[in-house]
Length: 66
Picture: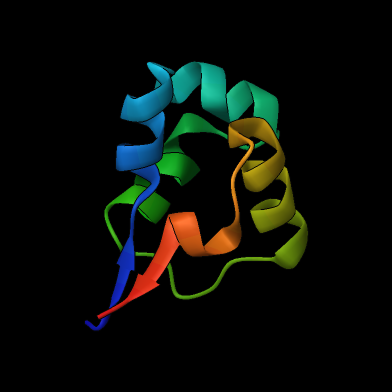
């Protein structure tokens, strides 16, 4: 899969737990795990925006094409 999800890298940089991140974004920790493990087939722009806001980053920091 050429698309790599880098949520775990950004969480580690900020020393933020998955549960804290899930609370800030407004989705369940289970859904964060699905995203982190690359099992998600799609992501809503509103969710991506909330993730970027919670981590103070750009979408390219979370999703990378290799």
